[in-house]
Length: 338
Image (cartoon, rainbow, N blue to C red):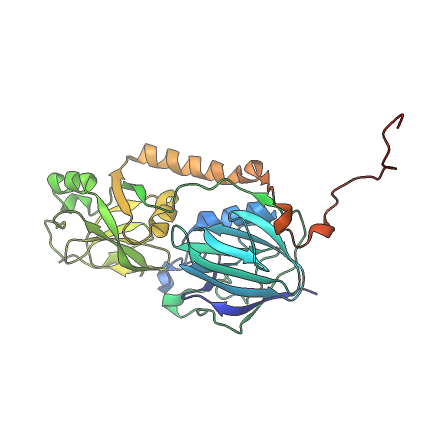
């Protein structure tokens, strides 16, 4: 019988997320899914399961949890303070959680979105082919204290594994492609756009993040009078005040603001995880470089299981120390000839 994870305390905007619902734009529904899809792949590698499993997405703050039976968990995405029965847990790693143990996840230390994944994934009901919430479309909901999240059957595997942490949680450079509306901006505007340093605005959510330029805003030759058109995650809309908006997983399906370009899918986790005030720049690349970047990212994801290392734990923090086989045999306590 599968167990459940009890939510005793929930941070804001906590929800179940998976890879989303692609292919439904014609029905008025954007893809949705985890803001940081790479974090799902990292958790899947740590637990030895598919990245399609639903995970708990925590925005800025975690919560307090308890398992009804032993579970394997993985903590990925934006690093957060985490303890298990008051003993600190390493982020970017897998751990064992026994029934009744208290898992506490506090505020982010960098980035925005942290993820709690369990062996077997969360067994929420499927809606339109996915288990995750699409909050802007009213599918699923924000989680709250008192929720009991059913867990799927876990095939089992090791815990105490870790992955190296990357630098996508503090801003940086986003690579982008020109799009059909880039030509609406003068070459001088496009060049200035690439040389501008942006700060991630405090306003933002799963639909998109606003970027504040360190100089004047940007404007197209057509102004704002363009026909509403299909938009997708990664599109960079230039809003009425000239500030760019990078669309994320729960973006609308159509929009009337001109788009100066589109951030590569492999760089969207960096855009989503940039905390308020983080510095970002945008660099246009050609199609060949974009395809090479996407292939490199796909290869890196496939290679995640080969980068796993064993987590070295301090015995003083191991409440379950007696469950470990520390010595493979016993001796009489005498040395040879003693």
